[in-house]
Length: 216
Image (cartoon, rainbow, N blue to C red; front, side, top):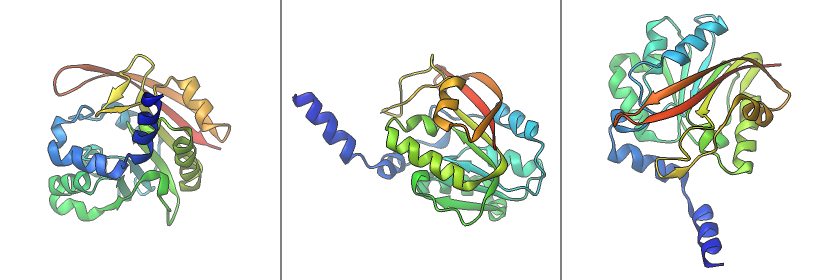
């Protein structure tokens, strides 16, 4: 009974923003487990969508990811980067320097995001799997539906079934494509998927699944 009470207290006392601000205060972007020098699969799937360079892209929970750098380099002109951590956003801004002015920066919890317009592409690598609570997943998907245009593209990446059960001290929900599709529901059509054995900065392997879906 005591352990159940403790779990209940942990769940309802957990402050998501505070947790991620602490992560980025203690570690540089290259020290977090999900750090990538080159986001190859994300770029490959974005190319597969054939979106125009002027189309609106939102990178959700991007942290200090270099995907935004690569998108700017390939000529995309309407990129929004969203993260709950202002420190993560500051890292990315500092890295981009003057180019940071070409990006829209959004600091908020994705489950509370109120979009002012819709996007052509939603990209999420390693955020959705942190929502272990069903209500949080429901909020995420409702925001996704509001934010993504009809016919828009969703690239969603999470730990695969064989991936680690925890990350950054938090439990995660692991996925395959069937499980992703079940969570997303009938509003999204599966197009393609990719697997990745991501190597962390300390040379551990993390198995990821990438799903590419289109909103109907």
